[in-house]
Length: 417
Image (cartoon, rainbow, N blue to C red; front, side):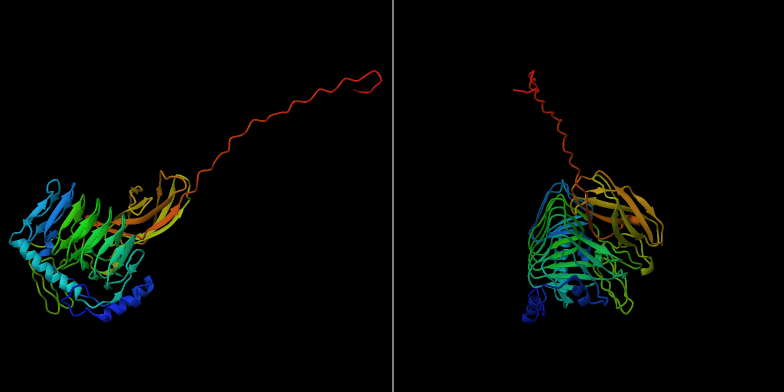
């Protein structure tokens, strides 16, 4: 695999990658394991949004919800104008410990046995929980959907032998209880997130991580040896909506985990303590069972004209009412939204909204979004439609009447000429 210290490197995995690069989404889903796996233990890295090895450089007004760290380097540049919601650690004891914990987490993710070998581009796939590996690079040119099937503890691990690269406007979407705190990207060299990428999960890169302008991350960017480069990016905490914890301790066979550096469990799991001794912050509302998890389905588009279209879908907000809205735009960055509405708790209901100010003859992307308590969002899949072209009116030409030639005069004999 990507890390030479693991026992999973070798011809066997290489042959598997060569034989299965053309997997269809259906086959990928079938190969993925449904067994519940433990989350990757992050230790003290759970509190970080960004951790670098050599340098951390920022351009623009980046926003980091958690800590910012660097070790063994000491050059952190661009804060301000960037802002950090936690603490900045520049080659101090906490940063050094964070790098130690990153090595452990990296080896954990890299050493897990593969559930399925995947192709280089993940766009358009819907994947079940599991460990997905590529012997070389991984790319994302569009939308990837991770479907937990109602299991909030479902874990998704991606193993890239070399690079991870996302295209402009690409996205990682969570479906049916999947949570950002349980998504991990182990990268054998460097990761690059393209302009306006909407990314989900924790990146564990051996070398460097670069985020281009406007890319957002619900998770973390953790680089072992190289630099982390930011450009007007936003990091939000990948909180876990569970009844007993968050995302990084070590739990028992049925326990859940918490964002800490410790905590170990027996058959039911135990809760660790955070580095500051305070309880971990949980983003979202605990969901007692899969029966009340939000489900969102983007529907058909109706009554399309050159300037507007009616978007439809179905939603079940979960245990509490939700706010629903459609995102739409000429790319998967969307950029526009419909008016917001309300959906009643616990009921599956059909919703519709009008997308206005459209341009004739244009392909549009759209999806339905449910916004739950604490701002937690559940996305429907991306769909498309095209507005008709505007009718071209041909100007009427004026009617031209040909002049009538005069008749020759008659002679007295009754003949002409």
